[in-house]
Length: 192
Ligand SMILES: [Zn+2]
Image (cartoon, rainbow, N blue to C red; front, side, top):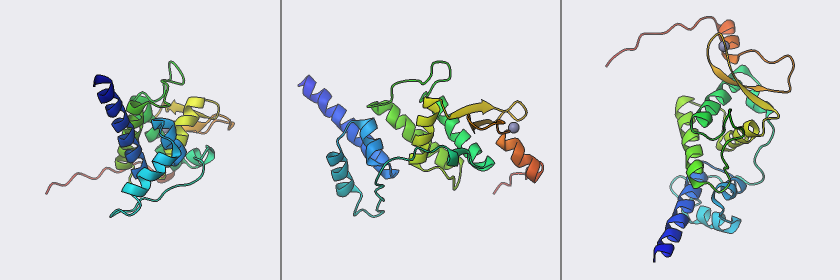
């Protein structure tokens, strides 16, 4: 019975991760990568639980985005990508010391952590431009290490993502934005 219980638990965990990712409009290939479920089962999950629900979830077809340009195109995008990269780093989804970091494929635990990063990003960056799939693209690109790098600004300590191939290297996006808009005026918090 023990083996059956373990198998059942493993299966349940894979389904739960798939459901969480479908809720974020992840593409089938992304869900397959993390959970190991085949396309047919992912499709059935989507049709059974999401297609006709109270808040229907869109099903994204085709491949995940792979271009990195949009992730760093403007200072604001580079900052938003930096917030997500910080969360990914803090959650051990990639490693600076031992690149690229842990094996992700088929890891239910890290898959949930990736979802947590995205959910936290969504709270920290209201109306942020990063979708779940663009966040996944960001993680893959950072781990690959040939196009995107992360840096910490000496002046403002903000961590941001930059294009490794663009020369001269782009300046800190936060400092650029502050230069443009002037210093931030902090309004006092009101109570009640
Ligand atoms: Zn800066």
